[in-house]
Amino acid sequence: MSGETPSPEPQPFPAQRWLLPSAVVKELDPDGAGPGRRHRRTARDWLVDFSCFLAAVCVGLLSADTIDQENIPGAWAAVDQLLGALACAAVWLRRRWPLGFAVAMLLVNFVSVTASGAGLVATFTLAVHRPFRYVAWVSGAALPLAAVFYWLRPDPDVPYPWVLFLALMLNAAVVGWGMFVRSKRQLMLSLRDRARRAETEAQLRAEQAQRLAREAIAREMHDVLAHRLTLLSVHAGALEFRPDAPQEEIARAAGVIRESAHEALQDLREIIGVLRAGERDDSSRPQPTLGGLESLVAESREAGMKVTLANRVTDPAAVPASVGRTAYRIAQEGLTNARKHAPGAEVTVTVTGAFGDGLDIRVRNPAPEHDAAPVPGSGQGLIGLTERATLTGGRLEHGPTPDGGFEVRAWLPWG
Image (cartoon, rainbow, N blue to C red; front, side, top):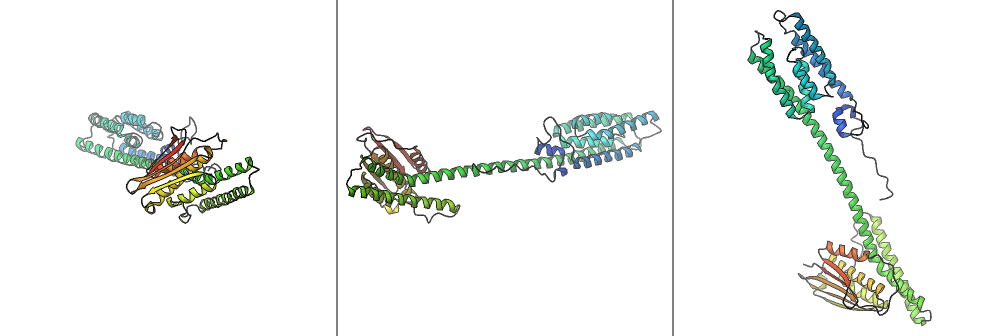
């Protein structure tokens, strides 16, 4: 409704944001950091980064103990340890440049054993933040470099096949772990995106349901009240233009006005009652049927209209309630239009049909004998009836006739 205040969109995990990686927070809330700014590390990021730094240092220290001090000059060992320290410090930059960090560690590991821990962290980071093709490229380049490194700095206590096997297993474990973390993040983002789409679709369906409900209410009010109010307008106009009419005719017109006003109020109360009932079943509300056409025509005749009814329906009691109700509304709208735009003209209502052939309704009036005073109208009644007929599987057409009159034609399925 127009008076409702739209509720603000819920923020993604506002209370548990610190438990999420900043990359996930960025995907869930891309505008949270502001224009031109990067998302800050969350508490979880700091904890994971510190753990990665600590793991790189521990693996580096263990690797430094394997350096053969007898076969490697002291200066070279110092350079190895210095590069390892720098590589461990660079772990804190792994989130900003995952690919660059991995390539740099690949080159550093070519000359530094102490940097091997940082190299494993770099491979893990690349597997988490980049597609698999980048990981495959970096890991594939690491194997020949490991062979060259072993050739430059051989270790007689560790055979080369064992070195190659160990390198493969470590890289496979790190890459698998990183891909698992990446797939878990993608799954979480996919579920969140799916939930957002479902929420949007639910909101659209709710808005569409409200729109359809408003259209149904407007159509029902028009169908019920337009006929009554047109009767009031016709008789009030007759009293206005014929103040010298006989007392009996004035009394009869006043009685019709009073009865029409009473029935209009009663119909309005029924509609308001249905609206107040909300989703409760409105099957107890009396609905017009095909058998009510005689009463409708009699009411129009009492209002001074010339109406001829030709009801040639085989077994009218077998007509479904929805089809009969739609046929009644079509005839009612046709009579209302004729009363508005062709007062005094004779109206013919023809209803034919049988089970299996459908129901045919025609409301026809010739050209008016004289120009009628303009009556307010928007044409929504015929539009609503066209929609109503279409919903039942039928069709409705309306338009002028060759003799200058007007005809409403409808066919509704039956059987």
